Image 1: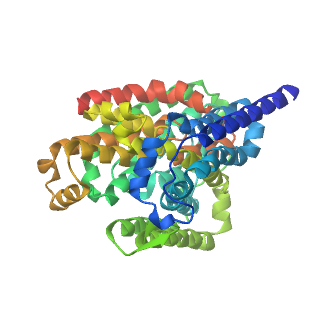
Image 2: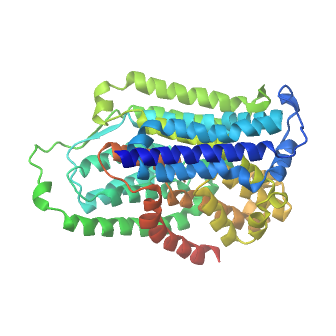
Image 3: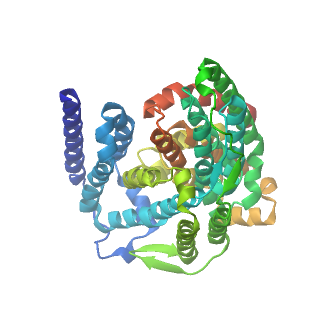
Length: 502
């Protein structure tokens, strides 16, 4: 107990030291004020670009801090982390926000409002809607966790992911997988491969599958263009499905078969709460609506918001509330449904979205920011794949995708209207073949490499939380990378690079 307390005090002291160091250093930054806190209307995209040029590299310290906290907190003091992680997330967010506001005033306020109103809030609303509605679909019946059954469950989830989103597919299929294997001793690998396939790779084929692809759709990429990623998706998914089966076969042979004997009466497999598919369809409709309908803009605290996006968010909330109202309590209890997984994502990503502001601003500054060496080094398709993917493993993959999407346009001297027009005419591949090669690499990197860490894609965290609530001891942040994602995924991504990008 004393040792645990000393670790906690040491951790808090370290956080306080970093907080003070960052705050004082930031406050000393020389900056010519562009706006005041009352000048929200005057803040423009040009200011955001200037901000990225001015920010020093050490401004990402709070972002690194929150990532290290997520990585080390559950490992060093799990009980303290489980109880206080919202406060730690808030502390890192404030460590950045307070000095940022003191130095940059209205410009800082605009950047904070921009990322929360346009990115974080819609992000959480979409996740909440998919989580809530999919939690009302219960797959009942006797499922025995054999390698064959587990492979089928993960395959179904992978096929669903592009159509109901990686979050929706993960939430529908993770509980049946856990119930089928509740008597097994070795099952961590199943959750990990589930994250690889259902929470990430499976969402490659439509803009509904993963946020980066949806962002591309909003910026002119046609809805069905992402089907061009099918060869790469099938290659990665096929290798991972084979590995899933081989890993599970190996561990299944190590199980004590006497403990796996099912003495209970077998229950036929059936699905309850299927009417929630209507609400899932409603969420998909809302997402498509916001991408194809263009309505007026409104100004909220200096941030220009599209009415169709606001309508989409309220529509998704409505779908979730209807699901809660109409789904019986027994179905949600059968799914062991509770709010902790989505709350954990909401708390932690609130801090991540705040502290990620300087990292994204510096990247958007391109050759004029302190990370110019990263942007200028990206020249070929294989570079776009690895740089976009590497950053998407730790940053939010949607703005990372958009950053390199714009970088590719700039490198080729193209504009978004030109690309949008070519996609609409159906001749983009003939007219701008080099851009399409870059776009393919960017899309693959953003989607595939979200599986590299727990924070690479929001469903990863939710699946991890649900697995831990069911009693599975999941690997730590670094344990996941060292034991699974690096040795398994990196060789596969190298194969993809050699076959498709060289």
